Image 1: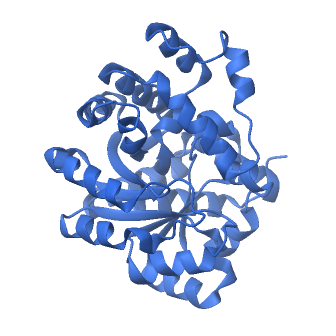
Image 2: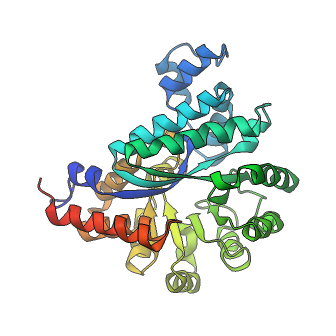
Amino acid sequence: MLSKTITTKFVYGLPKAELHVHLEGTLEPELKLALSQKNHIDIGQTNVEDIRKTYKFNSLPSFLAVYYSSMMVLQTEDDFYQLAMEYLKHAKENNVRHVEMFFDPQGHLARGINFDTVINGYYRACQDAKALNIDAQLIMCFLRDMPAQSANEILLMAQHHREKIIGIGLDSDEHHNPPLKFAYQFANATSQGYRTTMHADIDQVNSIEHIKQALEIINVNRLDHGTNIVENPDLVRWVAQTQIGLTTCPLSNKFISDDSKGKEILDLLDQGIKISINSDDPAYFGGYISDNYLALNTEFEVSKEDIIKLAKNSFETSWISPVQKQIYLNEIDNYVNNYEE
């Protein structure tokens, strides 16, 4: 049951930033079917329900297998635009006011799709997001299970689109692919003025070592997932002091490990960590950002103050100006002060 002071209406209406959402992970079965038919691609299913049955997995590798194979339906600039716009419409319903969206160009280049096709489609959607009253930005991710040289190549390609990309991230299968594998590429990205973040997926082999590499050696501006940091109190104290943001995703956590990591999320919040709630790959994990807030509350009966703090953390750890942050923080205060059920 929801706690008495937190309702679905309150959570959906609460202004939020979303800092951890993969555009390729927002491919709903309906759009996948429509694009497969438009582009004459045999995906092995002929109806939405059959596609939905394939969205089943119990580990990060099994999820990634479905995730990458689904990309084949994305062929044209308009396909990438449509995918992003469909997500942004959901974001509007969740009162997301600012979003920093991940995208994986290497997954498309490997299929013969041009980099310009991908970035131009997504960027057009970012521009049109303004009509939805959403400020949308793009984070280009390196796939960590590909060679580091491949990351060099897409960083070079991105130079022609520098104004369209706010930051660089690192995602995909973490096993045997530690942050240090991409130390040179991230140093190069930082020198070019990009903000940086890395996935530190939950309960991985050498989780703490990878978190230490990302924070202490690569010096990322933000850390994605990363709740295993609770295993190292010294790191927790340091992150609280430096105010580095952590982006967490309860629903995807539960799909991958049978644990939402809600206890760790609330523990870190209580210790002053700037942790935020996000949706990760909502088409695959069964919920957008408000659903993740509600899932956390259903399991742990979070206080209203904590829900508000999580929302404020999302803006405070975003990559926007201090003036913009204050505008959005004021929106939260105005919403809470004037809210009526």
